[in-house]
Amino acid sequence: MKAGVVKIIKDAIGGARLDGVINGEKLPEIVLDKPKKEEFGDFSTNIAMLLAPVEKKAPRDIAKAIADRISASPSVEKCDVAGPGFINIFLKKTYWLGILEDIIKSGAGYGQSEIGRGQKVQVEFVSANPTGPLHVGHGRGAAVGDALSNILKFAGYQVSKEYYINDAGRQVLTLGESVRLRIEELNGKAIEFPQDFYKGEYIKDIAADYIEKYGAIDAPGAPSLKDFGSQSMLERIKSDLLDFGIEFDNWFSERSLDDTGMVAATIEELKSKGHVFESEGALWFRTTEFGDDKDRVLIKADGERTYFASDIAYHRDKIERGFSSIVNIWGADHHGYENRIRALIKALGHDDSILKIIFIQLVALLRGGVPVAMGKREGEFVTLRQVMDEVGKDACRFFFLMRRSDAQLDFDLDLAKSQAPENPVYYVQYCHARIKSIIAFAAEKGFVVPEHFDAKLLSRLDQKEEAEIIRHLGSFGEVVERSAEAMEPHRITFYLMDLAALFHPYYNKNRVVTDDPELTAARLLLCNAVATVTANGLGLLGVSAPEKM
RNA sequence: GCGCCUGUAGCUCAGUAGGAUAGAGCAACUGCCUUCUAAGCAGUAGGUCACUGGUUCGAAUCCAGUCAGGCGCACCA
Image (cartoon, rainbow, N blue to C red; front, top):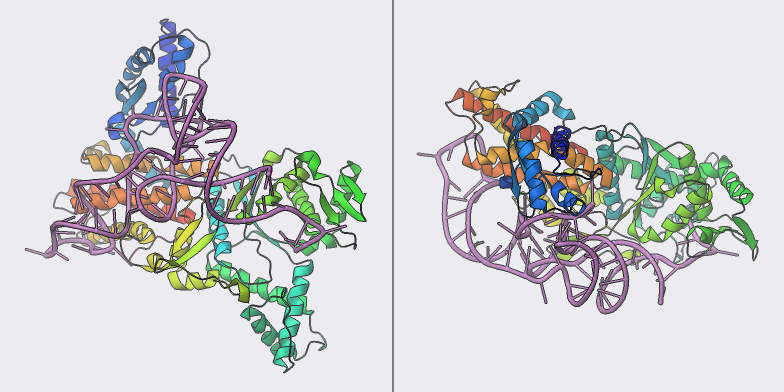
């Protein structure tokens, strides 16, 4: 539809050019806005104001010339010039018909697009170390990564969701040693727990579990403590994520990078390209050559490789897997790593615009308006599981997606749980449930939602509120596209809150099921379209659309 | 000191490929349930878009600087 309008405008400008009103050859890209106000039409464009300086004519004069020609188009109801030179286009009612027909026809697929053109995109997210349970910060990253993946798929990309498991290096060793101490403690030994060990209660659970399964640390057939510990944690993380509604396509083990020699191979490649040097007994990657603040160590003087060394091997592998775009979702405290990863990509001879990093800002949990204390000292923090159990999966995911990722989030636990209208997740879900309830009620009265739409039915939807709802429904596809391009899932959340805010007042003012079969049919159809789009949007967020509440 | 992010109504935030009178929710105040779900609706009030300059016909949006807050600057992971 939008493309059609652009063509009408182009034709109009072409006409104006033939008539000598416009002389310049160059035509700026035509941008169509969905105006904020109904009185500004279905679409609006600022093209006349962009042409004005080139043509050296008053914008309103140019606009007038173009608008007159647009008005002549058969699908245009009228076309005005407004303000400093906006061209406001009002389409004939058949335009509304098209939107509703499209929703009926496409159903759960309404809003899909092909802007991704099947390009392969990898989204790597969560990737929490298997040394402790997921906390709320991970949860936010999980919600954003999963919703973004859904949105990208809907917009025609081929998406692969990946979790990078940090199962190598010192932290898993420390985890193993932490478990060892707790086992000794359970065996009655007095222990002294070092500062940098993992102190959480979950370590005691793992220790007890180990004893139950194997009896003693050196029992025959017993796995190493670090393997047992990290496997236990990983299983717990997986089950948390599953209950949060998230499944990954690929779990990528850091350790596998060593096993397959990829770390060594990557260092070799950098070496052959002359980006590696030795100094003070360590092996360095000269990242400063590619915009980093300082050079980075790959292999320490003690012979151990750094975390960064496996990270470069991992990112090299990602690129070699042929993704046209790789997306990393990181906690905001990791932004210092961005430049060194970009340095790697450039050093390997690639364009680093292939990499997109989304930083997830902090989550502050509030209860009774007061921040919930995070007792970091004791290694205890609020887990994703706790929040999910308290407020439910749907509210949890929705709340994580109510803010831009790079803005800090205040998560009000009381609000998320409340069944009051001020709770946005209920407000949106209720929109869907309410419509389903209306449809059920209508069915009892012998009315069904029509499967086809026509101009006659459309003519019964003659209220301002109905036009606003249809306009909003019609913009869903574009919102999804923008959300995909900008990689900003929260746009969908806001879209849904806006849609619900249009529907509830409409419901309150108008009765859907009446004695008038035609009016009832028309309104049922509109309501069902709202429910369809609400369900589609919630689906992208990973939030359920209940039939009843 | 250097780098990244943030600064919009009392509170929490949308709005940045420059556009029309800057929006929403909450909180506050006034109202609405014999009617398809009141988990809802109607109304009132609330602003130097941190500040200062610049670019532009036009700036919350772009540029420069200032101020304030957060985070990051390891041979840690």
